[in-house]
Image 1 (cartoon, rainbow, N blue to C red):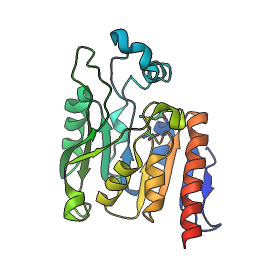
Image 2: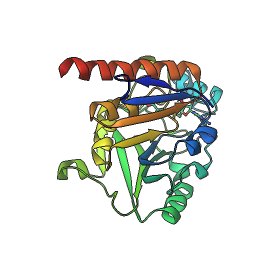
Image 3: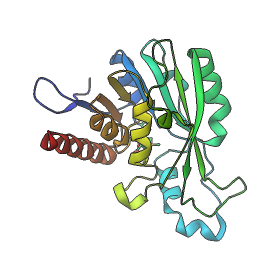
Image 4: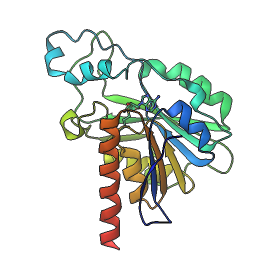
Length: 234
Ligand SMILES: C[S@@+](CC[C@H](N)C(=O)[O-])C[C@H]1O[C@@H](n2cnc3c(N)ncnc32)[C@H](O)[C@@H]1O
């Protein structure tokens, strides 16, 4: 078993972070109020024409295998009250069918990039990215009316920020955490820890899993910094 890194006061950690394989670790961790995940996408990383040289993140997505999709069996309603799942346009039918079979209700939501890449690559301009929020009874979406809008617009993150090609913006993750019921959140594909940062800032407890040691180290540093900020403000 992988030994986690704990963040927070000894005896009452606010985050527990595992560097390892989500498919092996997540089932051993038991129940969370919400599983929030941004798993590998199914996307075409080839092409791009003359814009390709301006898109090094596509090379990195390919190199790190983030274009090959994920095993939907990791979404398990026996282990969570709700699931938030990001996906690429082409994964919508499959993810939707999985969630529809497992949860009481669900919503398709989008976040709108205010500065999308000006390319289409034989598809549509990727100015809208999709995520689902599915829930069972007792775990329905929370928040003020303004938080319960289905479209959220914000700037996307640059590759240079954390050396990861698909880091989610803080404002988006803060909004999604406000929508999620309960206290405990798990992100089995945590990348650089964006879900964890939002969870800690919102006073939730967080568990994350990431198998890439470089991204895991970034996640540990970001979540530790979020906790330290909160501690100093208290
Ligand atoms: C789309 S990225 C998540 C990015 C994250 N939302 C962020 O803001 O940084 C998916 C992450 O899952 C990780 N990953 C892929 N397969 C995994 C597995 N089997 N176990 C653990 N992590 C995995 C990848 O290394 C990648 O960092």
